[in-house]
Amino acid sequence: MKISAPVVLILLLYFLSIACEYQGQSSSSEKPHYETPSLVVGIIIDQMRPDYVYRYWDHYGDDGFKRFVNEGFIFRNAHFRHLQTATGPGHAASLTGATPSIHGLIGNSFYIRELDRTVNVIEDIDSRYIGVGSFADYDGEKSPNNMLTTTVGDELHLHTGERSKTIGISRKDRGAILPAGHTGDAYWYERASGNFITSSYYRDLLPDWLIEFNNLDLSQEYLKQTWNPLLPIEKYVESRPDDSPYERPFSGMDTPTFPINLSYLVDSHDHGPELLLGTPFLDKILLELGKAAIEGEKLGRRGVPDILSISLSAADRIGHMFGPASKQLQDYYIRLDRYIADFLSYLDQEFGMENILIYLTSDHGAVYNSQYLSDLGVPTGHDGLDIGVNRYIQEKIQAFLKDKYGVNILLTYSNQNIYLDHDLIYNNELDLEQIRKEIKRFSLTLKPVGGALTADVLNRSEFTEGIRAKAMYGYHQKRSGDVVVWLNPQTVGGTGGVGTTHGSPWTYDTHAPLIFFGYDIQRGESNERVHVSDIASTLSVFLNSPFPSGNIGNPMNDYINK
Figure 1 (spheres, helix red, strand yellow):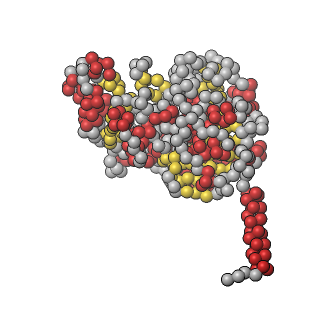
Figure 2 (tube, rainbow, N blue to C red; figure 1 turned 30 degrees about the horizontal axis):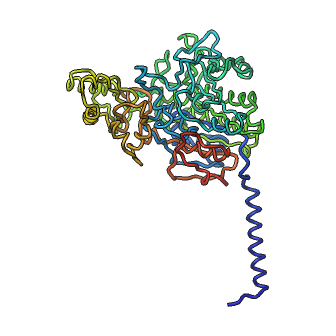
Figure 3 (cartoon, rainbow, N blue to C red; figure 1 turned 45 degrees about the horizontal axis):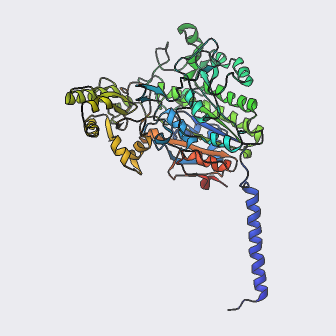
């Protein structure tokens, strides 16, 4: 069938108009590929479970968490890949794009055979504290040297000819240091003085802007306050009664209840600035410090993109003390919602949200108190134990090995890793691989233990899903033990007691909030399974920067770009 020339002309004009219209829409709504955000802001809320976004929804204002959800892109099925869900590996995940099997941070602390002792995840004997004055939080010097890979900030620093900056701030030293990477700067709260300090790894003196911030002495202002519920406590129907046997009170208080009179605890029980660690007020100070860092370092205003990582760690201390079902944790998130709204308003005014990229996530989740769950009829591995689970496992394995071989070949049980004395085993002409197999079989007879894998299996195997894959991603050939174990669901290393903790491969610990907001982010949500370690490559794509050296994550830009 022939088509006349006029018809062809009409069709050509029609398709040309559609193409022009599409091109116009694209150019107006999408950023050119060569553009990057002026500033990337990472907000890591320590121990935040993703259900907190919706559990307290009715108490939030419109400009904090609701703004993230309503204007940003939320991944509702984001998880950590690794087994040992703790602050160190959790903070490393988002900006290295790697797992402990690669970056080497297998826990908040881990045993080093060459030193014959446990080291802190950020321990560095060649560094010293900067800014402590006459005070000191003496628990070892700090740097990122134990982290074996680069971060997004490290690669961006190299990519821009060392012009881009990365700043990490937190209440916790590791919460500031690990996101800051090897080429950034990190500042954290020193609990004896209430000041923010750093390490000689980064600089010899505190910057002027931080000295000015410390001189404001904000910690002392908040120590004069009483922590009361922000809203009428009877409205906090999403949490258990305030006076709960599953919670741990502040030292100096008889019950874990409101009000918490900080001034009284300081005056009568010799508390100092460390008291703020378990209150919402410290995270308010941190967000103010974030503003000061932006101003003092001129972040996002120097012609190259910068990164600011803010780790809000009060949530972790409050969670450990009171647990996910507490009135205190609920009030913390209601307050944090207001603090975040104020911080977003500041960023809006200073940059315009279309020029900056924000991501919100956590470093791990948390389990409900094990005794509370047991009382509700939920199974835990603590039933019938008079001592903590970790101690129980170590004593049982030690007795098993001594009875079988006549010598104590167990070095330690640390961070869910069983370390054996290789020299003693070889000197007694014992079979290391066979011993590992026997320990695995024996450990599975212990009620708290949910599973185990030997180093030999982990070295030879590739797991693609499930708990065994998490064990693989958490296993580092030079730093992990001879046998890796994990506990049953709802089982923690202690006795159950009060408060809560984390560290397991189960959903309540691995499931993390993940929201992208600002810049070129479309509003939406996805239930696809993604990982916190996917954040690094996603940011690298936005920044047109190389991926971190150990990255195994996948960019999520196809989901979230307009």
